[in-house]
Length: 423
Image (tube, rainbow, N blue to C red; front, side):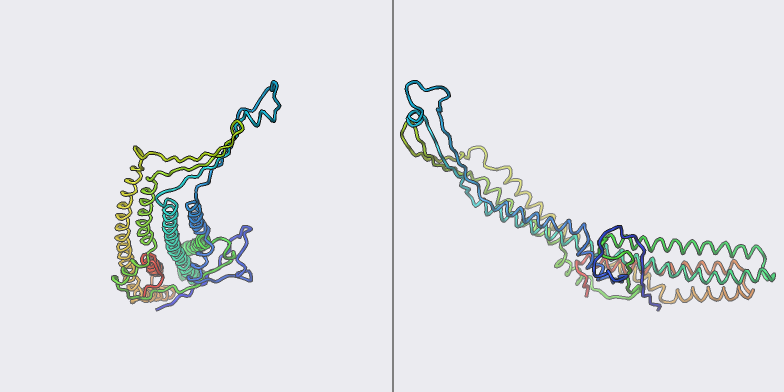
């Protein structure tokens, strides 16, 4: 069975961005694991998502704050015109009123503790969602990584075909000059060369675009412009147990973890709504100076819970708990479905790839070689040789595509399970 070890080198303009110093000395050759590690560290979309955790943690600070006290002061009955027969200091002392007071809202029902718990539970949900973004990003990088390997493998095939067929064209030219073949046959050979040249150019374009797409996911400045990838690109049968994978997925999937934590967060919101249904008293103390007399006053006030007892929010958050529970059940079922779909995808793509390595590739190459040998010696018509060449190219291309589909389906299985270790 033929093995491919691919090294891809891209020529992409850097655009003025700073390159990771680790790659400053020359072209970077990264493996799949290195590519995923780079993406987790430098992908800007993921970095933006991670800031939501910090934002949620900042909301915890706000939730844990106590109410501010209120200070009050005034000075009343100040004169605005000339005082008849009385000095200003005497008037201010005996005829004005000055007040200085302080009030504070006392929260009941452990509102601050409930707010903090609700904010912390929301942070836990956010953190699990960001972990799920990492899981999705790892799959996207794996998919793009194998797209690059497929494109390079197709480019190798196209260049090999072009080189081999160029030899056929050269032989055909010599045969035409000595009268061994007709001018029409020679022209057909030359025209067929255009198709091989076109295939090679298209393969170069596909390779360059695949590298560009992968670089965007890695973080554009995390690798140099002439970076490349290296890795195994072949069919290797793997054995999995569906039940074990589903069990592992239920333990590892961060989106399921987020759904479970959402139930806790909904319960915290319900507890907060009940706490908010308890009205808070306000106590205040005042110092007053009136008509030359100093006095102190204190007061106590609290809303009467006759109409508004936060009934609507309490009912809403109670229903939200049931909603979160249903979403958790749906997420659990989705996890099992994702694993099963990915599992059967691996099996199906593996069977397709196995068809080619079981002898189809060798048969296609042997048929092409026999037809080419016969044509060059005049024993086979040109059309038969071209048909054999097209069949060989189609089989080789289909095999490469089946390998890419198989390796990508394994990456999808890793995503479905929630871990890169499937054993």
